[in-house]
Length: 312
Image 1 (cartoon, rainbow, N blue to C red):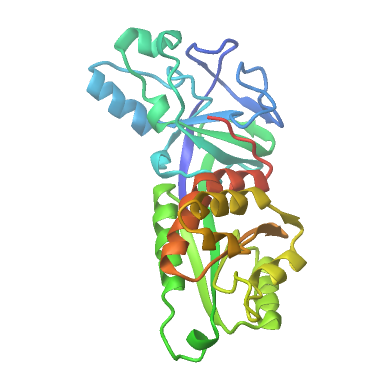
Image 2 (cartoon, helix red, strand yellow; image 1 turned 45 degrees about the vertical axis):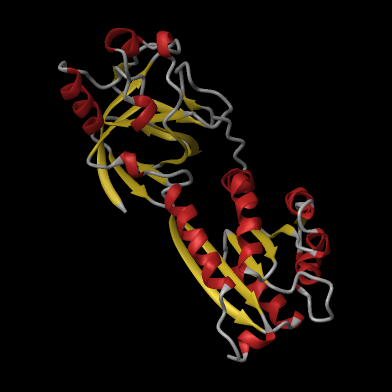
């Protein structure tokens, strides 16, 4: 958690122009009241750090001011460059906003700064947020940055690994993949692991506990075939509030072209409560094949679970 302050609050009535500092802004469910960017979308409030403005000005050899880059709120004392989607900011006594996007595509010739100096800092270091709680923001108000932790659970299903006959390999491999994925998205990762026998009751209890704990993502490995002890898809489907069939259908079709045995996998994707759940086969090669496809939509899936429909 970091704490900084508001330097300036800024409004414009047209897009693609600089914003003018004002004494205060009223933030409602659509963004900043009276601002050209207020709308029922994911980029309702924009933020840029004074530190970014000053660095850009030094590189460009001129002085820029709050609002010149069309940000609604200019902050100081918080490294906004490190902010990730789903992080939150609390501003003053009431306002709370959630990060939905880092940077944006530059307007190019439609951007006042770009026309003047040939580049702009907002596409690289600005952030965009949606409103969670409304209120009024004025200069010198405190800003508290609350990074969000991506909470994940990896469950390996294997009778022999659970008895210590051999070491679990697929669970640690999933963990390594998730660490890289979280790092690429600047998410802080909290990851729990378990090795269970192929037991439906034990798996159901573990999934229910993860759901109740508010885990964002649950990945199981092993137990997805058609053998008598392969119970992962059945348990997940029975607990699922929603299934997500397209992902696994895509994976089976893709890899069956070179390995027809891939069609025997019964892997499923689902939502249990607010938790995304994916059941993967137990081999390291299959873990990579499945996660290669799952990761392509995982960020957007996490957004959608939280009611965000983000289009960059």
